[in-house]
Amino acid sequence: MPMDYIRRMRDLREDSDYTQRYVAYYLGISQTMYSRYERGVNELPIRHLLSLCKLYGVSADYFLGLSNKKN
Image 1 (cartoon, rainbow, N blue to C red):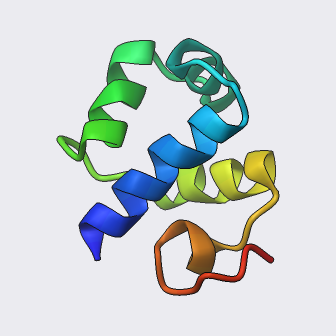
Image 2 (cartoon, rainbow, N blue to C red; image 1 turned 120 degrees about the horizontal axis):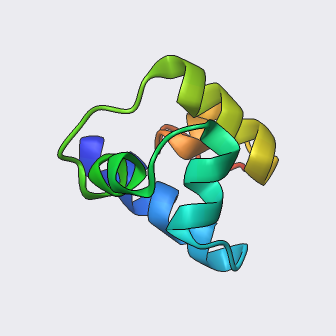
C-alpha cells in the first residue's frame, strides 16, 4: 500500500501540471521536504494528506490507493 499512495501523489501532481515547488508552497513546506514525501523517504503527515486531497479534489481513500473512485 505505501507505494500506491506515493505513486498517486506523484501522478496527481503531474496530471495537474504542478511542480514540486508549487505543491510545497501550497503545503507551507520546503520543496526538499515535499520531494522526500513523494519519494517515500518521509511519511506524509495527515494534515498534508488532507490538504493534498483538497488541492486535487480527491478522497483520502483514492489518494492512499484504497479506492479507484476519485470522489
